[in-house]
Length: 395
Ligand code: ADP
Image 1 (spheres, helix red, strand yellow):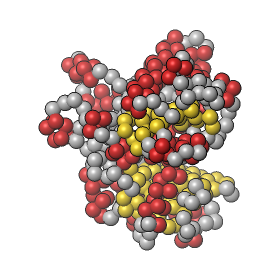
Image 2: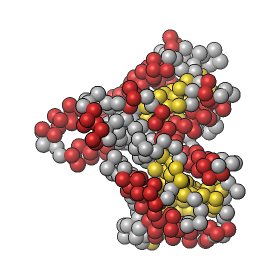
Image 3: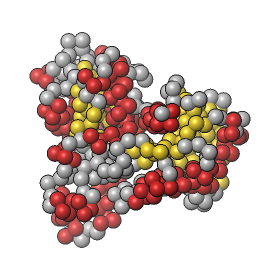
Image 4: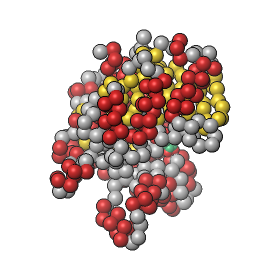
């Protein structure tokens, strides 16, 4: 029995999937939204259809009660599902969680203890863990961390060049995020190439609403673009990515406070800030219609990705593969072509026809003679959480 319930919770929402971890297949998916607001919303999907309703959901405990009700109404009550374990996505595992971890009271408390490093994420993750353990008391619960894959980075890759005493006192270092995605995508890329992951060097580009790059050296993360928080690195849907820290000081002196800077850099920057939409499809459509702000946003977005591709190529001493994943990476051939343009000297030769061909499976978009394999590999973080949870509990 490898049926795993995967929970990805925020402060006001719970996404869940029931997954057969061995078959790597979702059996049911659901979303509980607007927890704590006057009208909450439940949507539950199986191969049989979709069930939806609106009602007030006061808290995460109410959210799990709604989930149990949705399973029952869909004809598969949770008691009959044979759930083996519950896998929780946890955003920040700090320096202490380096692998999936079985949750007991102490682990739950340590996850909450990391909240000052991830104030937008860990409190919601923790609330969901408490509520889920009460709703499903008879099965093991496992935390799978978005940071854990990057704990293999060497000190030179995770240290910022600041006073080490200040850094230590405040936990200031690079943690990196999207680790679950970088891990599953690099594993699937190796499987696609028919090579063991521990023989390959890969540059993985996770380009979704959030975006990050990871240098994967023989299966381990050795560098990644996100830092202490998911704000560093690439240009994202609403986040600035890399910026001179002096800009923050300049704006602080100009009268901004911390909350305003947070809002500016996390929610009003990136594609949204530069071009008026966080959706890459809109930005490209506007650019094609001649909107100069959208053209510039795309140029900045692409230039930043190429900056990291170059850096990680050097870091890895050459790459066997460049791998595109997530919403933009999987679906925008134009962007992939722009990222790879003019890189023949590095051994990268895109096959325009293969790049243009739509698909939803792992595929090669470089020519046969390209020294670097350029791949599109769909990510599936929920399946990876289920797989890691299953591996831990099956021992
Ligand atoms: P999240 O980080 O929220 O999981 P996704 O991985 O779904 O985000 O990526 C969202 C981004 O992917 C958006 O910018 C969206 O425009 C882009 N995207 C999704 N589907 C397509 C598509 N078919 N063509 C081009 N871009 C797409």
